[in-house]
Image (cartoon, rainbow, N blue to C red; front, side, top):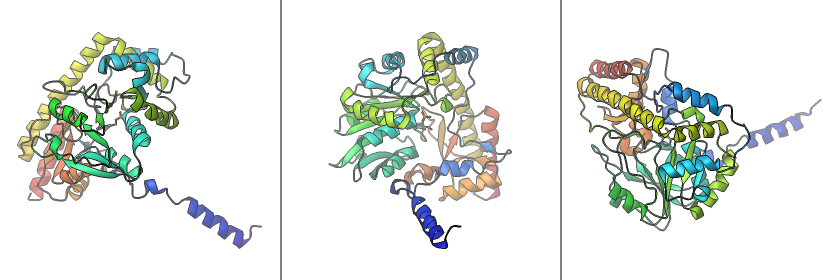
Length: 387
Ligand SMILES: Cc1ncc(COP(=O)(O)O)c(C=O)c1O
């Protein structure tokens, strides 16, 4: 039989080994997850960050064929052919062997970069409002995030607002932006690329634009690192395929980190992505259709926002989000009440930083009727609550 003393000591060892690591302390499920947890079968979900894209027969055939390729590990940085294709398409100046790394999604790419470069005490400049991951990844490395503010209604990035110090290790830019739908113009991007520190440009929404293609930071300076992937442009969110492009010397520690995080990206997803890039004509027409679909959904969202919410916003020029002002100074409670009382999910703006308070992110990656119903429900809720 176990002695009480032994049991006590075992319990205390267990309790101390359950003590979460410092790097994860105070990091909770994101507000996005918390709101999504309030969904019921009757909810209209305008909170999602996933494109509503249906693969066509050619796309499905490419996937069937990709599934017949060998299932062994690839090189850590990805198959040579896929690295070549990514380089050709996105950064012709890059040497695919040493300057392109295929990752398990953009998120893994970001994680590998932070692991490779960010130390406790470093400063990381992040957009506010901006994608939540940047600040969280910085905190996990013990770094301090220094937000740079973007202002409504255009959310234009003014490089003079970036406070670069001796401690600045990384600058993060995201264009087109989640949650703003704005684009960083070429002059601003060039200026930021040459400020001194490494600049990570998250270009995962690069193919989703409405007026003109957004500029890429690729090739703008020796300090520029591009991250991107197939999630948003091809609806491949669950297939986890992304990439990092940067100068060879910069990439070396990133590839080492990536090796210990993921070993390599899924070889099925790599084979499928190779096929997509190789079918250039099909891919160009797919991307045209994707943009046309989101353009139609964007118009529906803007119309409903104007008519039902009486809010006028500058039309988003990229991605599939409308960052919309609402008459509430506590948008977390507002979004939670909308979820429970009006059965519509949107993300409180403050989930993207302090500058997002007073706004909600409405995703129009949803069928037109759902966009209409959801925004109409928000409008009725505002009337019912006298706002
Ligand atoms: C700005 C931004 N970066 C990165 C990601 C992660 O994308 P992936 O699915 O390629 O990891 C997302 C997903 O929502 C995003 O919005």
